[in-house]
Length: 199
Image (cartoon, rainbow, N blue to C red; front, side, top):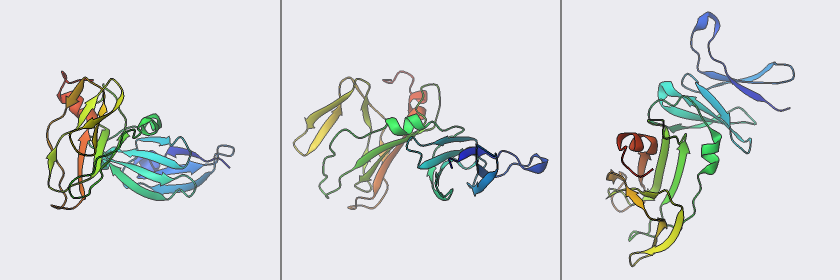
């Protein structure tokens, strides 16, 4: 049976509820209810059909559900009260460049999630994780495609073609000397607050 997911919306008496429903599209019988921790606003199913993503603007999260079991598997924090989810944005983000290794042996990874749209003022997060803790840095991006050019004298690469744009400085947080730092940037918010920036 293929399940169909729906925002359960409002309960009797029109009181907001914090669940989504899975139902059998042939009979319209509800097969499960899943509590998502905030009032659901938008729902999408991942391209592989394995996950259901639910925007919950009241708690600034996107809830991740296992589509086979309907169990809540986690939440992704998203600034600005997300009201919709588009899975194309999730499947189009990919890594294409080799990370350099820091002096403390950290090898960062980059990922993005949310809804990337120039007309939105928030909702698309870029995260660079596995950074050295308690460091300052910035995100460098471009709009002309990928590159793989050695950067400096170490193992790092410049991964985007010119022209490039630098964002404002970010703090990695985490622990000094450990690889538990991260930069998190809401790219939609960055573009909205920097209208002359590239992109």
